[in-house]
Amino acid sequence: MRNIVFALLFCLVAGLAQAEKSEYCLSEIVKSDARIRSHGYPAETHELVTEDGYVLTLFRIPYSHKLKNQNEKRSPVLLMHGLFSNSDCWLCSGPDNSLAYLLADAGYDVWLGNARGNIYSRENNFISLNSHQFWHFDWHEIGTIDLAAMIDYIIDETDFSKVDYVGHSQGTTIFLALTTTRPIYNSKIRSGHMLAPCAFFEHGRSFIFEPLSSLVGTPGNIWNQFMQDAELIPHNNLLNRVVDNACHLSDAICRNAFIMMANGGYENSNASAMSVLIETHPGGSSSNQGIHFLQLYTSHKFRQYDWGTKKNNELYGQDLPPDYDLSLITAPVHLYSSFNDALCGPQDVDTLASEMTHLTEDYRVPVQSFNHLDFIIAHNMKELVNDVVIDRINSYEGK
Image (cartoon, rainbow, N blue to C red; front, top):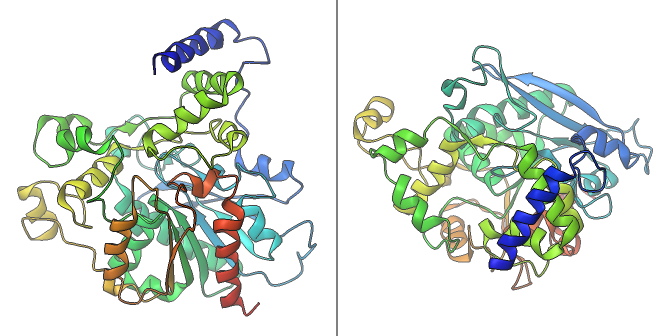
């Protein structure tokens, strides 16, 4: 551990000393649309405004240049990222492995969403980014407002009545929040695919749970008041330069920087994908999102944000926040989970599956070492996950 710390400090010095030299200086951010075009695919950028004023960016791969299928009807698929992430997570492993490209090559109209607060969705028509009020949201609002708006926008743009949906980590949580709280959206989902599904955290093994949940896992203490309504781990050019330099100097350092939070090892990880990912990660999020997840770990429940007894009664009409009723999800949903997921592990996925009375499939990745981040950065994710997801989506297409 001491060697890793010294190496990271060295990278910091190198990052500052080499700021004007190309080898170690982090280049200007390559945005999702430019990254897509760099591999020969067409790309579009779309913006929509939510009912509460947030300006959200969606990137689109409308067709595959390999298939030249721009004049054919192509079913839309929406991909949503996890906590601290953004649309680049679906692109970082390149056209031969990343799900966004693979779906385009399978004949789909691919849309990449970005939740409020990340680097691509940092505007609100009514609230300044510098105001605490800008960050007064958590993943419940991302699901019930942002995701709903994205689905409606895509349906309007494509003239399809339904979309296929794929989410990773928090991208699964927001889907569950939407389809339980606004169940009419079940009718707008042709199929849902949950990668590393996160709802229950009772058996979470990550080192982050115990110390942080003791601080903010229950409402009412000074830490909750201090931490709420703030940006959590924002994108930072200096931090990215440090980690980027680390990736240049040592794959092991790069891997440890990424894996320490997920706490699942890096047997399957692709270092080149991680070095691409770090250009735009962490992507920015509200502290309330993290607090809400820690509340779920503490309560062993999948329920709405706990503001404390007084505010809970004002908002919900009861002392405790209401549970999300998973029996209300009637859209066809497939779960894809792994045994080595330290955040949303197999026992907690068992609980989720047991409460989803209309669940279509509970798929477990058949490699014991596969972890939470491997769903987006593993060298073997194509055959273990992405090909399986595309096969399932194809079945709804009649392919």
